[in-house]
Length: 134
Image 1 (cartoon, rainbow, N blue to C red):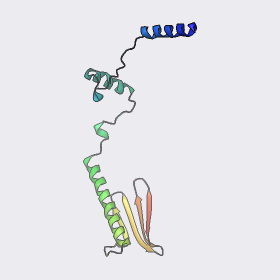
Image 2: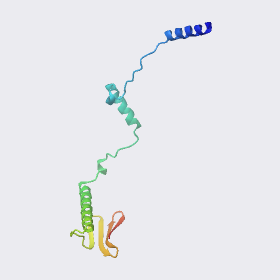
Image 3: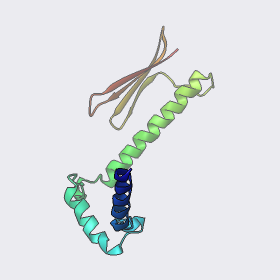
């Protein structure tokens, strides 16, 4: 019994001499409430780790003429999409058979036993798409 009492007394004396400290979290990033003086350090650290190079050369930007051409191509494809959808839904705004050329796109429309066939060819890249409407 004396051993147990001695062990309890030792344990109590050790516990009485132990100290603890307060654990406090402080954010480093100023966006999350951290110190605002850390901003430059965080920014320079992030830039040092960034291996992606942005293409900011103004000579590589599309010209206004290229933007206009791309816009016209998109409008043409949208119109073609509407016409094909209308012809699919039997609306009387159909697409007449023939060959159409717009910018770098060559569109051929003809009827076959499978239905209305639309071949779209990009003359710049050689990419070709065929749409068949039964």
